[in-house]
Each structure stands twice: as C-alpha cells, then as structure tokens.
Image 1 (tube, rainbow, N blue to C red):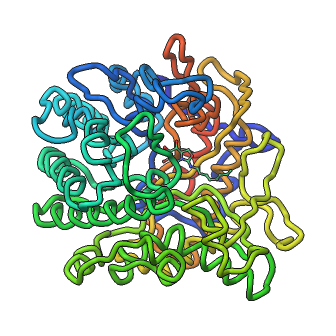
Image 2 (image 1 turned 45 degrees about the vertical axis):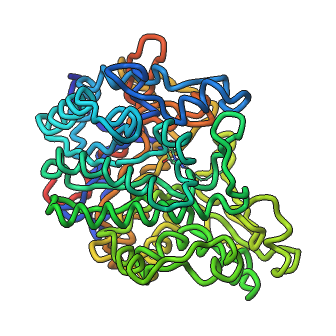
Length: 504
Ligand code: LGS
C-alpha cells in the first residue's frame, strides 16, 4: 500500500494549501458519491481464464483488420483480473470511496445463456468483497459493450428482431448478478452508453452472422432492444428488493447553438432528441421516443405497446450522464426534408451539424470549448457544465438526482514527468479535473441535485478502437511490467473532495 497522499497542484506556484484556495460558498454534500471507473474488457485481461467465453470485442481485436490502433487487444490489458487486490489497495490509499467497474457477461455466462460459470462469480465475489474490506463501495455496470459472441451469432445480438431473445437473455444475466450482489452495491447501471454500442461500432458481415436489418435501421432496432432490456432489468431489481439505485449510463455533450438563429436552435433540439433524448425521453418522460426521432426516422422506429411504455417510463432512479465536453450545433445547409435521405450515417441523419472547438494545447483532445467567436464567454468547462446539469435536471427531472458517471481527459501523446518516486505530472488533466469539479460545485450552489461524480479512469487501459494510443488514466501503467504510478491529476481529483466535501 503506497504512502499517504500529499497535495499536488497543477497551478503555477506548485504545492499549495487547498484550504487557502477554498471558495467558502461551495460544498459537496456529505452523501455525495465520488470515485474512479473502469470497464471489464478494457482492464481485466485474462480473456481465456476460468471459463470466460469470447465476446464480440475479442473478434474486433483479433479478427477485424485495421480496426484497432496498433492491433491492440484486451488479452492482457491491465491484468486486473489478477491484480485487483493491489488496484483496490492503491485507490483506498488515496481515500477514494467508490470504484465503478463492469462485470463481463461472457464470464458469467460463457455462451451468454444457459449454464452459469461459478468460477466467474467466485472472482467477482472476491473483487466486491475486497472493495468492501477496503471501505471502497462497488458501483456495478452490467453491460459495457462486451456482448457474448455466441448471442451475436445466434440471433444477431442487439439486432434481434424478435425483441425477446436478447432481452430475455440479458434479463436472466441481470437476475443472476442482482441476486448475488444485490445487497452489496449502492449504485447499479444496467448499460453503458447505448448510443455507442447501438450506433458507433459496426458489425462487419464477414465476421458475424449476417443480419437482415438494413444498416440505416440497425441503431434503432438495437436501441429498442436496449430500452426493453433496461426497463425489464430495472423492474426486476425493484421486485427483488435489491438495495441501491438502478439506472443506465447515458452519454453525450452539452449542446450549444452556434448562433442565436432559430435554425440553430432547432438543429440543437434535434441533436438532443437524436442523442440523450432517444433513451432519456422514454425512461424519464413518457415511455416513448422523442418528437424529432418520430418525425425523421419513424420508418425505422419499432413501436412500444402501452404495457411496454408503462414498464419503461420511470425505470431509472438517477440520471447518469457520461459528460466529457460540449459541442456547438448549427443548421445543416441541405434542407431538413432531405437530411435523412442525404446521409449514409444512420445515427446522425444530417439534421444538424456539429463543431467542437478545442483548446489545442494538448494535441487535440477537447478539454472544453475554447473561446469561440459565437460564444466569447465560453472558455473552460466550468463555464458550460452548470448549464448542462441544469438542463438535465429541468428536462428529464430524475427522481433521485443527476450523477456524472464518467468524465475525464484523454491524452494522445502523453508525456509524463516524474515529480516524486511514484508520482508523474499531467498538468492538463489536473486542471481539467479541478475546473470540471468547480463546475459541479457551481451547479450544486445553484440548486442542481448533483449526487455523484465518477472519473474515467482508474488507470490507462484499452481505449477501444484507439487501442493503447490514447491515455485517460489517473494512473500510468507500464504495460510491460504492469506497474502502476499515480499521476498528479489523481491527487487533484481527491483533494477537491478533501477541500469541499462536508464532513471530510
Ligand atoms: O473508455 C471509454 C471512455 C473514454 O472516453 C469508456 O469505455 C466509455 O464508456 C466512454 O465513452 N469514454 C469516453 N468518452 C468520451 C467521449 C468524448 C466525446 C468527445 C469526442 C471529441 C472528438
């Protein structure tokens, strides 16, 4: 276990006393949950260990050519399947109270359905119990994109047009996990970022069973299955009386009209509908898809029965948003009528255009919009984040508040300097976390019910199609030796809570 943390500041004078910098009118409530995150395929490794079955990501990484930067795989990744005890000890040593991770479905059910693999459950028993022994509360996501390969080939996975097989298999998996850990987990997430696994990753025909669903329709079939599976899992959890909140992780960006024209306002509203609203309106408003989805892609949208609407409506306790950044929106130059027909991208049907403005000092990753001629007031994350949190609360009115379940800073060419034996400096990520949490504090002071923040990520890991080329970690990992090193941003993150959380 490493030594107790010191305070490291990204700010010019170097180490500072956080108390001296404290804004007295800000605070995190005492029950605010905060921690760090990972996901099974990105960190576990051990892909053939103890009866794990393959997932679609084993195919993406091993079979699909030119898809993953550097032909990287998750075969070993951070080897967390074996190193979890030290990993939990390292976060506990910094006083991190929550660890958010996902469970691998194809470990628990190597074929996605059928026999449960008890060895996998013994592993997760120990992972969860180790967290609890260290006083780190586990937060569990059931599905972070690693679909058991067998189900992809059996009925097309999330493209299952019966809308029953995939839903039933998922809900059965959820039942096994809920009944094993229901009383040990304070926050459950059924799914991570449906828009990503439904829209962003292709299922190349050569590698999976061919599907009869046309490409343009695929995201909407997948999204429909997601909503049914999520809703049923939520109802199941409640009927089992499990402890803890149950929600799904939605994702996106704060969407800002580029100008104050009504065309840009409309384009921005369409973007909300095609992104967060696609899933949030059914779950938080009325059990049904938002207006612009119905208007523009009605041909692709399956319908819910009245019973299904009632089941989906209200099926989340908190609104969980993975919120990294903001985007400007402007009206497309083509006519709105043509926007669906004109595009080959099924997910973003040309009904709005987007632009990011980056602060480019870091080599490309956006750390929040830099000043844009259209919005000269916007310089950093804390300028837009409170508005985003207000927007979520006002639009979707979650019963138990809003949580930011991922935020973080990805660095493509990360150069780290040693500042102490075990600590490396990453000043841009440090100021990202500092500034972002100031945005959360401002929102709290303005009355938004923000209930938690989870930083992505516990350490560098397999960044999906980017392989190991983009680093999001608050710890650096030497992938040859599997040694971990804290980055200074981790201390910045922790110290914001030491400074501002009531009772800390
Ligand atoms: O590792 C993933 C992280 C990294 O950044 C994680 O598995 C996902 O759940 C999540 O999508 N993650 C993520 N999202 C950032 C999206 C930022 C959008 C801005 C893109 C600008 C070019």
